[in-house]
Length: 194
Image (cartoon, rainbow, N blue to C red):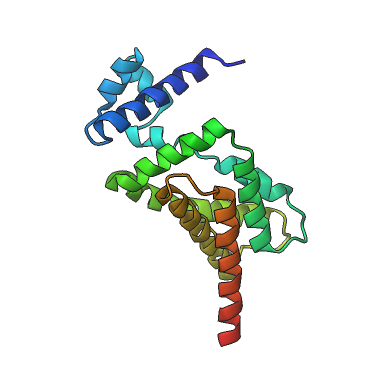
């Protein structure tokens, strides 16, 4: 059952995304979003700290972290991360996947949002390291784990970019699998060079 708060939040997101598509992100103000949604600006800010947060509010980081923690302890880290991301994607409904496509398309087309997207990638890296470290009795994670997590974040981001550039016509799960396969092959090539 949906609560009134959830309905208000969803309505604000839907109205904002519609206005961003029609007018452009930069040309749309919080005041206009609130008015179109039939609420005050104060109500808008109860749900979202900024206009940018409306776009990034649907991210599923906590779900990916839960999938990471649910993976087998002996699974190699790259496989664990790949499989957790895929599990998160497979859990999305068709509507949620379409929403992800629209939001990501907007992010890539809007310089201010793209900058915010890039600024969030270290948070994604930190989330992966924290989840992998949670199952280990070792001390602070070393640089190798941070490098691995960063490479995995980059692989996933690349898969998403290819998906958006294909306007969602390709299978995102397969793109993620391919990106991680390419990542594993890259690590093998690097190991051979040493």
